[in-house]
Length: 83
Image (cartoon, rainbow, N blue to C red; front, side):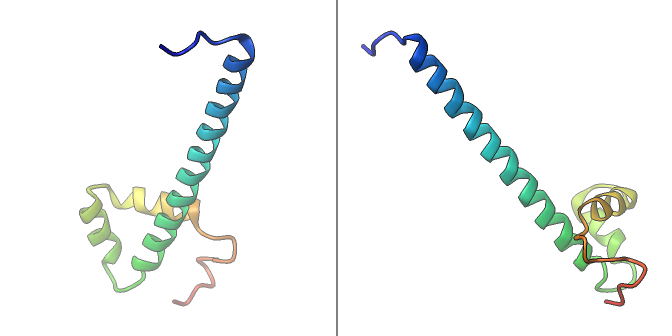
């Protein structure tokens, strides 16, 4: 049987859980950013690609627009991007 925790053990455990949770949140944000930046590039492949992506993801085109705009890298300006 494992020993009963003391206050120090509980505090350490809470700190470790908080650190793990923070790492998880940071990784989630990184993955979301990478995903939507890739989708932003893919929607420029041909006219109508945005709708095809929306259909594949089972979301509305407006959702694609909002998310790609939200996660667009700072260096990408849609007004000057000629890709």
